Amino acid sequence: MELISGGDMLVRALHEAGVEYVYGYPGGSLLHVYDSLYKQSAVKHVLVRHEQAAAHMADGYARATGKAGVVMVTSGPGATNTITGIATAFTDSIPMVVISGQVMSHLVGDDAFQETDMLGVSRPIVKHSFAVRRPEDIPEIVAKAFYIANSGRPGPVVIDIPKDMTMPNERYEYVYPKKIKMRSYTPPLRGHSGQIKKAVELLLAAKRPVIYSGGGVIIDGSSDKLRTLVDRLNFPCTNTLMGLGAYPGTSERFLGMLGMHGSYEANMAMHNADVVIAIGARFDDRVTNATNKFCPDAKIIHVDIDPSSISKTIIADVPIVGPVGAVLDEMMALIDEANEVPDAEALETWWKQINEWRERHGGRYDKNDSQLMKPQEVIEAMWTATKGDAFVTSDVGQHQMFAAQYYKFDKPNRWINSGGLGTMGFGFPAAMGIKMNFPDDMVVCVTGEGSIQMNIQELSTCLQYGIPVKILCLNNGSLGMVRQWQDMNYEGRHSHSYMESLPDFVKLVEAYGHVGIRVTERDQLPQALEDTFGKYNDRLVFLDVAVDETEHVYPMQVPTGSMRDMWLSKTERT
Image (cartoon, rainbow, N blue to C red; front, side):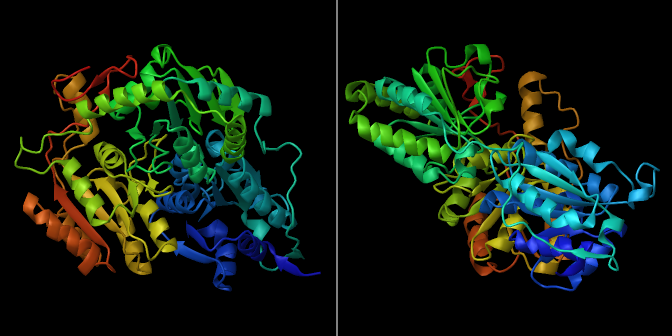
């Protein structure tokens, strides 16, 4: 029997759970744990400059690896500073374990110094939470936390630990469970065979099919199975914002992203489809537009591991609850067994129509109406410079949409952004979490001059730990998406959407010990990108690119319309 302290138990349990990095910030309630971290080397700690950044670093790590990221913060403000990061992970179904310190057990409820009810504050935005009541329970709680975070529909889990649970002089028996069983938590392991059979029959009979896949395909590690299904049936495929990379962006069968800023061909195909299969997607409002006008002639097949997501906004004709991979395996087996192929003539006609839509818009934009660079051409140049093989994180706004539209992702887990919550300040720390775990890969944060300032203090963390991420700032001097809405809906009244005082980003970045490059002319961009990914490959580079402030993101769905109702430019509407 081995007796160790609660603090040592926590650190050892993290190691046994496979944790290499913990992102956090110390404080009084967790000092015993931080002392335990100091006395070992298996679990490494990354000291951020703000706790929100710790949550986003863990989140970026989780999205890129598929494993839960770990955050460690002190009580009170330390814990509450993680709330935005927890909500970001929760909304996008990202596995995360957040360890928050708490005041001594006997002080809970007394409004003690730095006391906050972290369980209460975080309850609406976590998958589950634990409060440690006995030090000897720590190993089992940690094991359960990782099991819950990673299984089923993933999500964040909070472990709240009072300081007296980690006292160094109080020792208890350490037992880390070999298996976890929770009677009240049993995620499905396969889909309903009868429903899968119905879905296959619908797919094989379809005349105008669309495969619509979301982040659930990537989370389940089933991108290869999705590709097999798409290619076997020769069906068009579209991805959600969170699902980009699940099917190759350079494939002729790929329609581009769908939804509010989806491609013309993707939205038109969805609206006119007769069968839509949604795989690991939740029909969120940024996809459907007005739900009563969504895909009016289509039979809907919906595959999702979370039963609460099915028929929540769009009624499914064939609901299938189960893991994406298991369901796709069974679908492919039935398709092969049926020895049938979809109607070739109908598919040929469908593809002809889709290609006509593609020719009408196809991501076009006007490069020549401004001396300033267009954001779209900067993203295309970055795609070329990185050979389409970078991890790309983004913040939220126009730059996010331009990156999603014009960087063609051929691999899953490469497009890392805040989809559901829309968190400005996410991209930079997420890129840091990725780069530390994939040091030989290119990692680029696409951001704007507004978003980057929300966590710009992490430039200091990058210097301390030698994290050479690349930051591409599309600088239009304004909150671009806010300004676009004001142009379109408020007669151009730009209420507080212009950044009237901005720092000299080059000098600021250099003050933190990194490389800053300012690009103001189109012909400067190729050399700047070459230096960023070549000459300064082992340095953090901030590439500040001046882009046309008047540019809008198109296509853009018309509010309260159907998927086919879009603005295609400032003067052209479907």
